[in-house]
Length: 88
Image 1 (tube, rainbow, N blue to C red):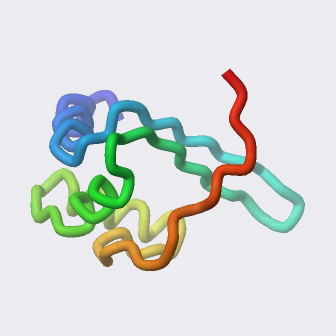
Image 2 (image 1 turned 30 degrees about the vertical axis):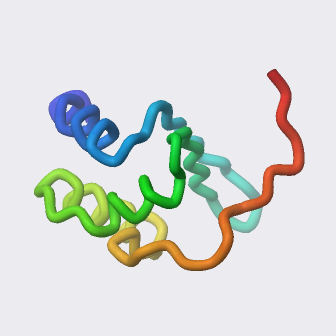
């Protein structure tokens, strides 16, 4: 990822992401990828990535689809997850 770090930073800024954390959770029934991010408008950030034709964004969406089976080039539908706990 280091060789594409500047592209990643530019992508995050383009869609309005302030912070992003990826976690890999190894569970007995299979690994889970957890992506947490902060943005002023989460739905706008998700849809901005979905609509982007920037070469890095397209590559990133392709990698995510290979890893998760989820198509991040489709606009987000439905409600966002409900926060049930926050500790600072």
